[in-house]
Image (cartoon, rainbow, N blue to C red):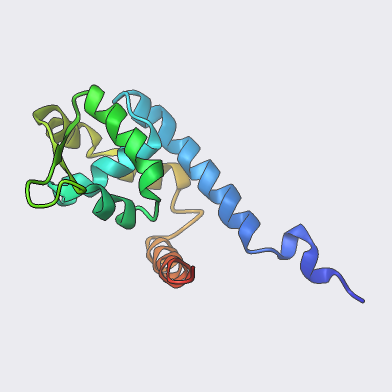
Length: 148
């Protein structure tokens, strides 16, 4: 019986895991200047795109459980980046809105994506390859997120 499929070099999960960790590491010095963690940055990206979402909507967009994101949102509220407010029509739902400080960070964060692309370098990944990789990963996320 061959165990070739069980070799690390033949696993899809390992390069995804390692690349994810290394990419996030590239974000850290950029985010430290803004006093943000990577998960906080992801929440802000969602809210900069559409302000005024429920906790469930943010969690769904980020493919996270609400019990994972709620403590993060509470910390961000203490940092005065956002405010949490119970919905009047359904008190089980909590609406998340950016504060002025949260909105102003968008301008400061504007160059982060291109800094990351510069760090990876066009000699590693062309612009076309970058978009193709994003597309493929998006398909994987959609497929696996639908399997529970």
